[in-house]
Image (cartoon, helix red, strand yellow):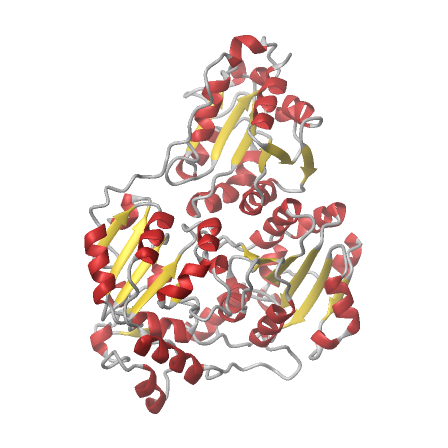
Length: 594
């Protein structure tokens, strides 16, 4: 028996069922062993294999791994490593390598064909990176995999030399009787925080519960009924968007630098922010992080102590623990008197409904109205992939109203263009009986456009909506707002090459429809949306479309740029409206908040 056969048998025992790969010479033994052990799906580019495996694992209880060859196969995949690392998601990537006797060592740049030091490249963006130059035991392999699932998860990279893959082995000599390596548990709380947290909750009159992606979907679902009895407004981060339905009576949106205005305003007036499973990064707090929760106390729950000690924002009670256990504690506490606060929250939401308008040319669709309409048409069992960057992403996270049972999956930390299609394919493979809806900008979609062929080959139930706005909407907006419209490399007029979408999809044999103003009543569009198989829809978006509200920067007296606090989104609210929605915050747009 050759070692690649034995090792992949072990992976199968551990629950792996899918292998996403791009074929290559330095993984020839692994490919040969995988063909009869897993559902093997070829992709066109290596980065797509890692992204697809990450999203597959977010949806399915089964496991997928990515298989890439040495050299360019590994370098092509690095973006996928970085994305999963920043989102704390475990994904296994197995890479090829030249024979151990052909390794360059420390003195040469290269000896073997396509040789490059993969470990050195991916080590900063993995939880564990290992070179297998000779067969390792089952227990050793399990320990390598466990490194990516201990405490804060992350990718694991196994770089396998070609001679190790094909080495003849005796299974009994490598398997042994040692039990599988245990996955390190998440930190056990010392519970010293409980009395202080209980007192904070009891004294709060304007609390907010902010649920992040670190709170598992399972834990959030289990807490649904109890959330209603706590009478605390619930908000989510973008990564935690599917932890509660938009129609829940206590749901008050997604605060963020690019968040919903009413959510930002309410969060900033809370006297207690209970942030569970979120690292409270700068996009969450605003770049002006000193003005985060200016009239309240902040409780942050995270399994990574370094996130609690990084120094921003101000945290009054840091708790190193699993978010689910702290949520259970909160829900067991007596509910504070929040009647006045909840009434105010609903008043703010009603007052600000529809207040932000954007400029949309007559020939184009309003992207915000499109996202709201799409959310009304989406089904409870749909999987929503709102891409990961740019104008389309921002619109979806501001306007899409998620339903109970839906999954929303993105990769916000890296915020890379091009994630959407690859991630949607992974989600579709994980749930072949569910519809996957992808929304992505044309600039981002073009970066991994080659995987259209993969979608056609898979015949997945994937519905692709492309914001056709002639380039990079967010970059164009930045250049318009801060540099007087001196555009550079953001659209076809400034040298960016984009395809004729109708012709491109036709070349792949994938149906495509261009949406009109009444698209949601178009029988052909509705039939394609509700029917089987992959379909693309082109959403005509104005290249000069505005995207408001947003946090903007201003020039400080000393000449430096200062970002506005989270509640002071542009455009400014009219004074009578501001007076109505900023009841608990003096001078909401004043310098005192910067």
